[in-house]
Image (cartoon, rainbow, N blue to C red):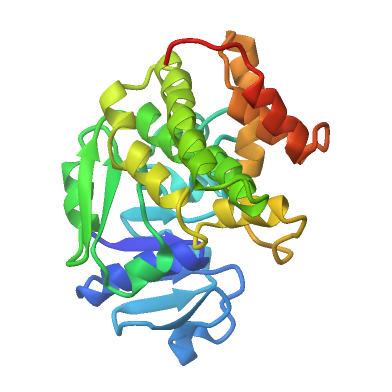
Length: 315
């Protein structure tokens, strides 16, 4: 099956490299491809990694959309608009969302957005603990592919260093990938503010409880949250400054900012999840505090005191 990756950010580029390294003919679409086809690399988004011969770069979306499988490596908050703008080109395709989050405007995850806007496409989501530099560097990585009857997709997207597990729980996989970003911001804030490793461990643990609470209330399966796209991704994202969400929180905790243009999916997701949880009557204190800090309604010290002052209860 032919494959195109739509979006030449770090993650999309890394997936294209991994697939092409194993000999699969892959088309990488970029809005502004520049001279990537000639230079055989992506110095702006993923420097230091050369493109294998089977990888072609194009700025022609029509050409890229001729492939059977389209990996949508676009930022979460741009996904819905991208699908609407090119709905006819995506009809009948296998669309694999490679972004993590909850759409701020609709409250939907990526798979549900695909189903809503392109109902005759096969909707899937690829998620799990992974950094672009690891995938592009050929390091062992395991991800979860959520799709109904996804065995053919699983086979097509697996490579010598990328092991794909299959799941039919689209809700659980998309929410696990989305919610862990919120917890990662909280952990980054704690570390940046000098609150210590114990505070980070507490936030990860209680954050995982929030992830389960929200996901199960929205129809996810508990086993999914304990897997790669839930606990696995949480562990990676909350413990490494390679994570943009953790790095954003860390900078926030230190009173600094990340470079302009850095994609931090957890910011919008935190606001969307907090609002949805309130409507459902779900307690999400960590997500709520992240939103309060982002909106400057509370300082980091005030948010910390509010969490510590919550009523005592059984775990």
